[in-house]
Length: 251
Image (cartoon, rainbow, N blue to C red; front, side, top):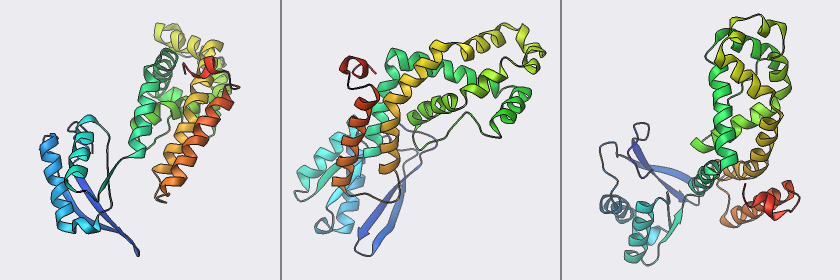
């Protein structure tokens, strides 16, 4: 669920986890429902009532402001119940905050311009896939903000192929080299500063993306395991910046 109404998020689903495994309960169509604290609380409280308060240990929902308020209302009414924010949503919000930092904001914007430009030209897509052996520059993920950093990872993985592409005879002979946008994209790809900034972004974000994949998997790791994985992600970020605090604290 999200704090805003989204066209691609129509149903709220409920699951029952017992000794024999996980069972699907109902779905609630929330497309035309405003996500106010009162309405969301009544919806979740009704589900708890249906299952039986004595059978519910934990409710996991997003940690947007309205859902935090809902969680507080639930635990105030249901004394034996725990509210837990969705770990995947928490990590996605951290990545969102990362994207607001200048180095990430500027680098992600450049990366998007590169991929958008290439994928808007059939001939450039063909050139790219020939050099990358069919691999693409855009990686999809479960969350919105992870995609931006995964795409930077793809740009980094294929930086040599991209440089080869934008210095090739095939590129120099096509009409895009004489167009302002084409020259701008070429300069961006060949800019060593851009490559350096991509590396900085990846060092900061990838440990969290690895953690995101863990908590968003179907393996349903235990809470203690999640805490350990988060500590490992923090440690990895410090290692990536050689434990120099001033290097990773702003990234």
